[in-house]
Structures are given as C-alpha cells and as structure tokens.
Image (cartoon, rainbow, N blue to C red):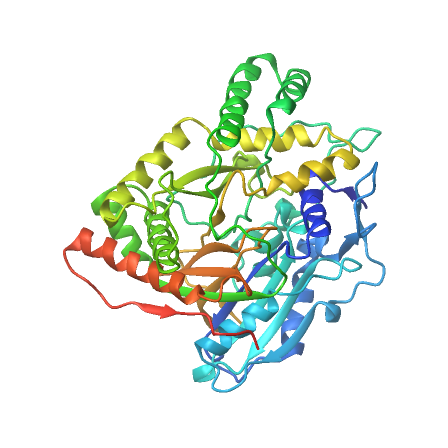
Length: 497
C-alpha cells in the first residue's frame, strides 16, 4: 500500500533541499547497564527488530521519489529491497569511552544526511562506553516522524513495549484521500497534552509557518473554504495575532542566528527530574517551565560571555505542542503546533526569570496560541508543492524564533533492552538553516537530560551554554529549597573527531 506524504512531512524534505546546513533528523542515544548475559551482539539487535516490525509497517517503506515534485508530493511505498541489516550497524567509542568521546560520537552521528532511497530510519549498536555500558543510537528523518517515528524506533529495541500492547492500534492505515490524493478529513482541533504528564511518545520538534501581511487575505479565504463557520472567527484571530508577532514583534537578531553548515557539536547536562519538579512545586509552574528557565540562564551566560548586548525584548523559543485529540495520539500524521515563549535573558535574577516564563506560558496556553501555527500549516497544505516549497523556506525563518526547545518526555517506570536496564536518554534535535543551536529535554525514570545540538563552526563555545544551564538549575533549586546541590555538567569537546 502507498500513502501520500502530508504537506507537513514534505516540508522537512524541502527544508533540507534548500540548505546544506539543515539536517532534519530526530533521534537520540539510549544508554544501558551491562547486560546480565554478556555484551549484546548486532545479531541479537537485528532479531529483536525483526520480531517487532509487523507492528510498524511504515518502517518497511521508502519515498517514491527522493525530492518533492513541482506538482505532487512523494508517497510512502513498500520497499521491495528492504532488509533490516541495511538499517542497523555497529560502532565502538574510542578509549576511555567517557563523556567527551560520547559527545564527539553523537556530534558526528548528527552531521550526516539519511539515504532517501531507503526507509528513513537507522539504529546503531554503540559499545566501548565506560563501565561496560553500551548504547543504541537511533534516528529517523523528520518527514518519517510525522506520526510514530521516534517512538517507534524506541519500541523496536526496548523490552516491555507498552504502546505496542495492541499492535492493531498502530497498524499503518492509509490517510483518507480524495481522487487527487489530497487529504479529505480536516485535522482535529483537539487540546494539547497535559504539560505535566510523562509519556513514552516523544514529540518531534514542530514547525510553524511564517507569513507576511500580503498572504493574510489568501489564508483567510482558505480558512473560510475549509473550516466550519463557527471556527473561522477564532482561528482568524489567532492568525492575525501570529502575523502581528511576525511583522511587528519579530525575534531579535543575535549571534544564534547565522548561516550554518552540516557539522555538529553536542553537549548535555543531566539533573534529577525531581529537582525540576521541586522548582515547579515551590516556585509555581510546571517542570517544563523550570526547564525553560534553566535554558534561559544558559543562553544569558552564552551571550554575556560573547560580549553581546542582551536583547531587551527577550529571545524567543519555539516550543512544540501537540494539537491532536486523544483519538489521534497514536495515529500517523498527528496535528502539530507551537508556542512562542519569550525567554527573558536580560533579567539577572533567576527567580524573576522563572516567574516571567511561567506567566508567559500560562498566557499562551490559555489563548490557544499554539493552534495558530497548526492552522498555518493546515493552510499551507492547500498550496501546490511548487508554491509550498517557497513557504517551507519561511517555515523555520529566524524572524519568528531564535531557537527550538523541545521536550521529549520518557516513562516514569524503568525500561530495559535485552534484560539490561536503560539509564539515560540523550536526545538529538534537528537544526534548520540559520539556527545555530537547539535544545531537546528528555527524561527517563528520574533523570532529565538537556541535549544541546549546535553548529560546529559558529558554536565553539557550546560549553558555556551547557555550564549556564547547569548553573541555572542550581540557582532555581536554591531559590526553591534555600540550598544547593552538586550537578553533573557534560560539555561538548573542543572539536569533532
């Protein structure tokens, strides 16, 4: 069976085609304790993957063409030459296999494009970590991840795969299409997920579409033609607010938004998830707000040490939200949106920064601002691919936001693979053109990890950002508990090897 890419998924192909520096792969590295019966083998990994592929048929499909055409988008089609061995490989960290070597390896893993002639997913068995630990690195193309991409890769290898308890729930069903292949069912307008809920379904970074005033009339006409009348007024208002934010209150110009190449750096900072929860409990807001405040501290330190004037209007982060209703949670092609959160980097007091972020996110959520971005993506789907390609180049424009900060929440309960406990997840966030850094925050059990992906050439001081995030967590926790605790900062190496 074949399935046409959604306009949203095709966007990520177009972004890559337009810029050498845009790599639209999402993924991460899962680190495990030594297995009870000796080191795992590539054959064992392959056997586990083969046993679970029937529940994820998309993983046997490739693009019908490697690039979107002028008048039609590619389709997902069965790959007659599919072989699991083409998607799993083996690598070993150089000695001593510590944090520097791991960051080095993740950076290199993030610095290449995927082969579009094959199904767009990959697993790597990574050995040589200190203490006999081992890891599985995974990545999928963002076009592939529009539904269950990253979560599916995790479930290919993890034991006790709860989201696959009923494989029928995840069976790939064709999108409802008309004779011309266009989607016939309008996207849901469901509410976003509870920000405090932990889920084993990672949400990929979600796009927003930057538009000009000249396009507002056309979008308004499309709204009237495609939405129920009672929804038109509300969504039109959200579009106006987003256009105003774009045209009048654009994101500030900073050294974070420069031309980038395809080589990456990587750093990470870990802390107990309970610490972020303590900040939320004592100072207000959610663990997401605490994480955003920590990132703000890191960005403040980075710009300050660069001698850069701190923007009085705040940096702007694009924070993904899920707009799908409960019935769509496990379906392919879920509807995505974004909140644009002001990060008050010019504010010197940690607790005040946190309070401003809490107020900002509450206001944005109450106004359903995230749905405006989803509406814009819906409208872009009406354009033919020839026009859509131009819109895609505006999708990640620096005019609307300075960086992406996304949450990839894991399960509260322990997980394992081949009987070995999973200890850490190090997430990888894609970078679009002219965005030199992005942050993904993953949690597993009671550990939160801030994975920082950056352009190699323009972010030689990535360690400064990591140090600042670590310091930001300490300051927030001190404000919440009147005490400090030691942290572990995992910084990027000076170079990619």
